[in-house]
Image 1: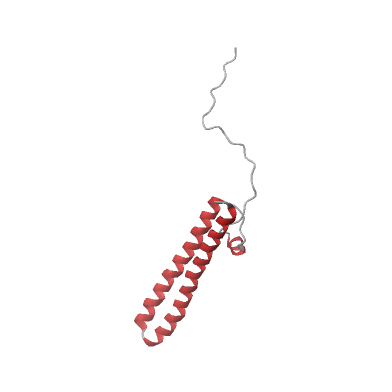
Image 2: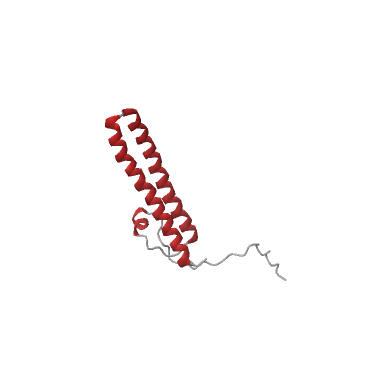
Amino acid sequence: MNSVSAGVYYEMGYLLALAVIGLSFLGFMLAMMMDEINKKKGIVMYVLSIILLLLGGYYYYTVGQWQKLQGGPSINKLNHYLHVYQEQPASQQQMLPLSPQPPQLPQ
């Protein structure tokens, strides 16, 4: 999978997470309306909306962690401000050998 198509998948994940969070806000508004008619149902809707908000936030954070694992550029500025995912510059680290070399004995 190249980095362009991977970025599109991450952006779709972020959009789906924001859609879940948006649905939870609609649930809050509906809960306020329902609260005036029936208190018990209104409270149940508040609780369900809070659960949906938390699940949406967790989903957004999880997509950010997967993108951080994969790396690459991101056009999503919200992640930069929320510190969910910030593009890291490519580091030039020396790869260490998998097995250590035994020390050479002087001859």
